[in-house]
Amino acid sequence: MEWISTAGNVLLYVPFILFLFVYALTYKSQKRKALGIAADVTAFLLFFSVPASIELLFDFEVQPFILMAALLFAIFLLIREWKTQKELEVIKFLRKVWRICFLALSAIYAVTWLAGLIFLAVQSFR
Image (cartoon, rainbow, N blue to C red; front, side, top):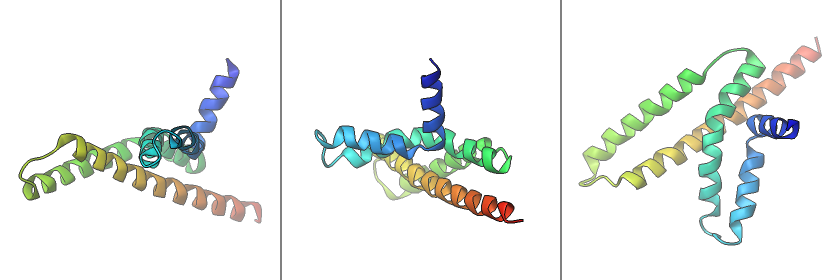
């Protein structure tokens, strides 16, 4: 049972292993959709991974801020879509919000770990 906990921790702090795994699994059967499916699955994990990484590296809790930002972004995008579209397609809208959240969280994750590496390198040379 300890290996399940270890695998969960590895996926929590390195979510792109899951991205690559899902992409490799779905590529044979869903060539064109494999990237989207992998992004959708990984986006869910990134909502937990980004706050955990920030808390681990900088001892600062940001989970409520990230969830609030995602919710406010979805509301803003919904209002914009509602004003520009005649009829709102809910599934397309939710997919768009989810994929934008994936891109934003991936960028935040990369910047967090890059900043963490720089922070640790500076601390080790003191």
